[in-house]
Image (cartoon, rainbow, N blue to C red):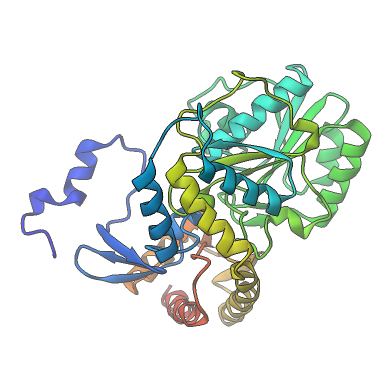
Amino acid sequence: MEPSDNTNSALVKEPMLFLHTFNRIPLEIDHGNGPYLFDKKGDKYLDFFAGLAVNALGYAHPKIVKAVTEQISRFAHVSNSYITDIQIEFAELLLKHSGMSKLFLSNSGTEANEAAIKAIRKKYGAGKTIYALTDSFHGRTYGALSITGRNKYKKGFEPLLPAIGHINFNDVGDLKSKVDENTAAVFLEFIQGEGGVNEVSQEFVTALKELKEKFGFAIIADSIQCGIGRTGKPFSHCYFDLLPDMITVAKSIGGGLPLGALLVNENFKDIFNVGEHGTTFGGNPVSCAAGKVVLKEVFENGLMEHVYSSGLYLKKELGRIKNSYPDKIKEVRGRGFMLGVELGCDGSKVVQLMRERKILVNCTNVKVIRLLPPLIVTKEDIDIFLENFDESIKDL
C-alpha cells in the first residue's frame, strides 16, 4: 500500500500545491474506523485528537454513513431558499437540548461567531464595546479574529474591528474595571481550547452575572470546541448556573461534515430581518443528516453520560501519572473528554513520542498536551492511551 514512486507521494506534493498555512503531520491517511486512523502503509493509530474535536462519533460510524448516504441520494444541496425536512429535524433537536429559542445555521464556528458579532452590533450599536478574554480563540475571519485574545493569530492582519476589548482571563478585578454601561457583550469559552484547556472560575462567572444584571450586556458562550457533550454536559457553561444569551457551536455537530450554528435566546430571536444575514451552504442537508445522528447519540442514547464517567476516570489516571513525574507534568485540567496536560517543557516531543507509539495527540500553547478523543472511546482505548502516555513521559 506504500506508494511505489516517491514523486507521487502526497507528502512530496503537498508543499507544491497548497499555501503554507499548516504544519502537516507526516502521515498519509487512508481511512478510519471507530477511534482509529490507518495510514497508506497500513499502520493503525489510536486518535485522541479527533480531527480537532470534530469526529465525536469517530470514523465511519455506521449510523452517519447510512444517514449521509440516504440524504445525498435525495439531494445534497438546494440552498436556504427552500424548506427541507432534515434541516428542521436537526434544528429542533439542537434547540431542544440547548434551551435556546432560535438558530442560524452556518458552515463553521468562525461563521457562527461572525453572526453573533453582527447580532450584537445591531442590537447595541457600534458605540458599545464587545469584550472577549485573553488567550481566547474564536476564529480566523476578521470579526472572529478581532475578538480572539491570542495575539499571535492577529499579528500582521491589523487593523481589525474597532470597539473590541479584552479582559484578563479569570481576573475579576480586570472584569469589573472594564465592563460598564458602555459594554455590548462578553464572549467567552467556558473552557478555552487553543489557549491551553483553561476553565473559567466560578468567581469570574459569578461576577460576570452580577455585572450583566447591572448593565444589561449580552453573554455569548463560544462552545465550538467545548460543546455538544464533550465535557460530560451538553455545553461547558452547564457547569455553572448561567444560561447565555447566545451559544455558538460547530466542530462535532456535523459528525465530520462542515456545520455550525448560532443559537439565541428570546431576547435575540427577532434580531435579523430578511436579507440582513445569510449563507449559501450553511445548514447543508447532508451535514444536517450527519448532525442529527450526532445529537441523538450524544443527548438521547447515553453517550454524554459515558463521556462524563469515562472523563473522570481518564483525568484521575492522568493525575496518577502526574504524581509519578512531578518534575515533568505541572497540571492536569479540563472536564470530560476535553483535557489538558501541562508539561514543564515543550510538548512537541511528547506528540512525537506518542505518534511513534501509534497514538495521536495534539500540543497547544507550547506546553499543553490537549486530549480531544472521539466521544465513543472505550475504557480499553483509554487504558491503551494511558499506558503509552506514561511511557512517553518516562522517555522525555
